[in-house]
Image (cartoon, rainbow, N blue to C red):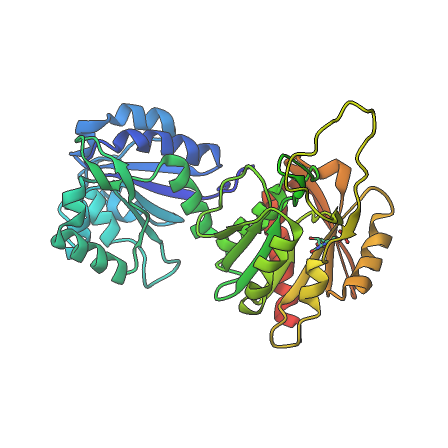
Length: 407
Ligand code: C5P
């Protein structure tokens, strides 16, 4: 997957030990499909060489505003025209101070000041601070950071943790993968700006006794991908997750649950606070009527325990029955093994929802790829086979379009 294909990124390095992470970031951006133009300050060249950065970006690195390679002698203009973003990583305290003051005494600060903001296509500026915690906490730095934000820059991080100086605190630059993902998210169209999305994901676990239970093979990957895609599309996202081993997408608020009843209890108060509800969870249909308080023991007699089951609440149908005004736009999933569209259409009616997303259960559980068919009153729309994140983005676009039109 190359989410940055066709994108041109200017990656600026100012001085700091975190310059080593900029090497990794360059690799990540190139792997994601971007072309990367590296620009380094004199201080950055003390920490990592232009040779390394040129090899990784496969492009000549710029370090001086007096670079004679540019025919018009204006690298500060040429380098940002046609760029999709400028990323400063690492951004030192001194460099942020320069940005805040609009100083332009070397190439990198000069090109930031000269980037298109008003005319043509504006070039976003993303800044990843990296410095000692005292420098970060200093009122001067905090003032400068507030100023560059007010001037339109996006500040990524910093994170807290171990620092190169041996101290521990705020000021660590985000990791290369985190910066890559922030940039990808920043460049996504904001189809759900100002909207809120509630997602359920993963299996549920229905206890039989303290050490056993019934569950299913849902990995939660599709639901997590939808939560991530919705957040990247600008939505406020709450994710109610059954037991899965997946990390929470950036910017998403996560509520962990185990059983269907817990999932319902988590969803019900949230539903009226969200405009869109996407139920991807593979909720167990039944649960043991009563979970044993102690482990059920094998007694050697050959007799097996007989379990009685009761039906679980249908979370999606319950939300779909909320009164208008409290009811979000509801999207259900249908994992079937045959007659996919027919079953999806039945489910549309039975659950009383405007959209069902059908997929082939056995072909998708635990996999990274999937195929989806959207079934609604207007007909069927197939989304071509792809990885779950690409599909999630396509699905989010379809949901955003339908939600805008919904009564
Ligand atoms: O009824 P079935 O499990 O086939 O329906 C699947 C859809 O309903 C999914 O969107 C799933 O998340 C949702 N569902 C639910 N609560 C249940 C069962 C299914 O929210 N108890």
